[in-house]
Image 1 (cartoon, rainbow, N blue to C red):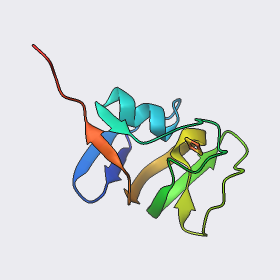
Image 2: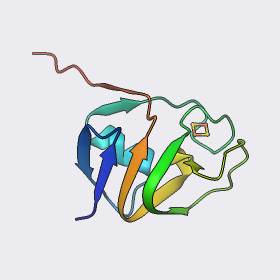
Image 3: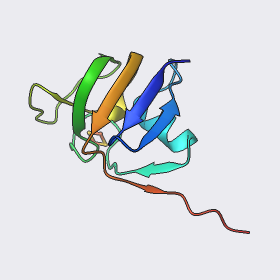
Image 4: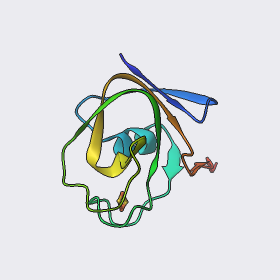
Length: 92
Ligand code: FES
């Protein structure tokens, strides 16, 4: 399975049929988001290496090296930086 490396700290398995945001959530990471539709830019982060495929229309402003994880999927291994997330706290 391709890997998604986040902030040089965490590596998670990429699920090619899910968006990157969904993949992070399934891996127990609470990534920042708001619209989940490419509009607000709350999920915006940097794509350091690899390629993504957009499955929605990006309305939020992004720089050339930035992506919107809520509306794109990883094409193979990718590395992301400046991802704002929290690790989900497991409750007993
Ligand atoms: S959550 Fe709004 S652009 Fe991704």
